[in-house]
Image (cartoon, rainbow, N blue to C red; front, side, top):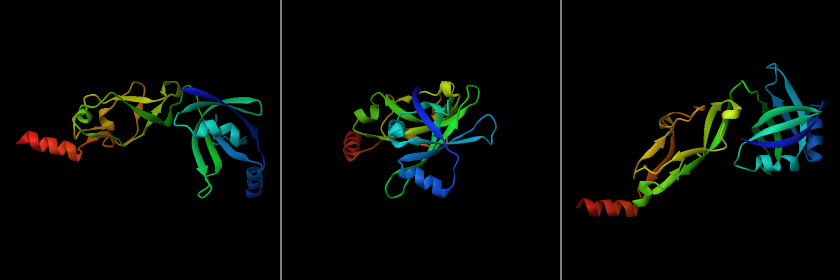
Length: 194
């Protein structure tokens, strides 16, 4: 997993008024959850320009977070956007430890050319990310799925997949990808069937 360096400033004023003032200064309020004790939560702020490359990317990062001189390993858990302006309103980070598993969405990459596509079908990726539980050191940047043997009209479901060190949390009957029949493929099948 790639790493991302981020520095935050601690904050003590937590009310609406203080939060509004922070946002006017183009700072984003953020919280780090999951400390040594379950009720630990560290409130801090980051600047919009600092988190831009962390948020607007399909990749996942382990964030080396520095707040008031202390360093934490974390992952970005949740982002709240303004419903109209799409401005970032709030960030939630999760403190990660080497011996505790985390739950994170990992991007899916399809490898190879499916047999069904060669026969005139259309490849459809239904799940762009898979939800996995694993130790953060075992989480890959992307999950690769080989689709070379995927025939026309067939699909790959979550239950058919397994990866070393990863527990898949999506429903086992969720379709990850499929090769759909097109009109041209149906026409060819009808002509060859006669």
